[in-house]
Length: 68
Image 1: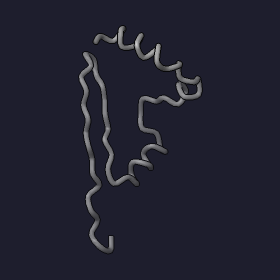
Image 2: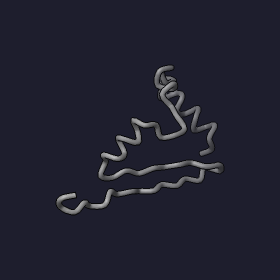
Image 3: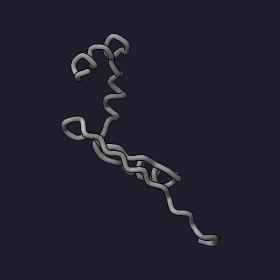
Image 4: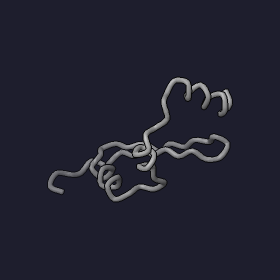
């Protein structure tokens, strides 16, 4: 399925996002997100490039030794 038919099909199923939801979209990791990731034991960062190429990089926090 190409992008346009997919978008049309989704538009029939879902209403457009609220303006506040759209306003929250950012193209970087902000300080709040950085702190959240730092406290997470596991996170997957994903990107999507031209031609629909996708990359996902799982990262696991190394176990800390006792007393550190």
